Length: 407
Image 1 (cartoon, rainbow, N blue to C red):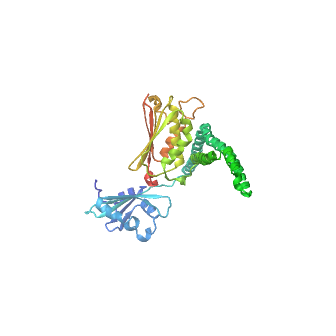
Image 2: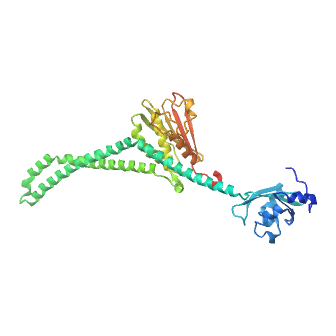
């Protein structure tokens, strides 16, 4: 580093005039930190620090304790300082050691946050208002796309719910009949117990059992109950998955989540849309719990699964793979469709871009998915070629970076 030439102390009259006209602060200090000279800009800035007058401008009272030692060892020290008496403003401080022969410190000061004009303040306020409106519109668009996706799948979801409800309803009819038959048999047993000779009614009891087919009821009844319970559990799971998928996460809802559980819930919702077009293959690896907004990631998975299903024109295969690397996880959804043409690949994440017919898509699915993944500090990679299928890989960090690191 080029060494600075020693400054005279006190400065010559011409130099003093020049220093007085500077907007930046300039101070000269002895090796022990005592102030020798400060131009008017430096005095104005240092007055915003507590005990400036009482400390007589000593370096060890103005700067952090390590500043002087660091400057002696490395030649200079630089760090922004908060101005204690002016909240929200910072001070850029550059301290230079002028060498052992001079044995002095040169301190350069600059206001890092100059006071803004009224126009600047109005512009900042307007910017803040627009930012709030933009965030609100973005959240509303995200929620609308979620509900639109569910609306698109409404018929399939209704079928998934109606199917178990249908056989539970049928089972309840059979159970009602079985209960009536069992009560009829119990009535015969009660009459036998009240008779003087119960054994005399043995033939009537046997005939009633055979007529009501009680042996069959005893075998079928547990199975009906098991099927009915499974049907109700199936409906409960679908309703829970829909609720988890469609709810709007709040900013504080970042929490550790199981991505495999989110994938399975999403597959549950879209399965009726895929089952007649593709075979689903799961190749799950071992994933750690990751910090995320799970319902938003579920929407990403849904969009990719639906796109994979729509890309398959003939019965094919959709493969869902997962895995992890140090500090990050990945989820890959591939299909055996015709692939994405190169001219289309450049635009697939553009808002409102779609190759589907009018009324069949909004063109927002991949765009919103891209935004959700970016919000999670991740990325989406696409590998596709004509007649070779497509693979979308979502890569996410296991833990979200801290605000300072993210900035």
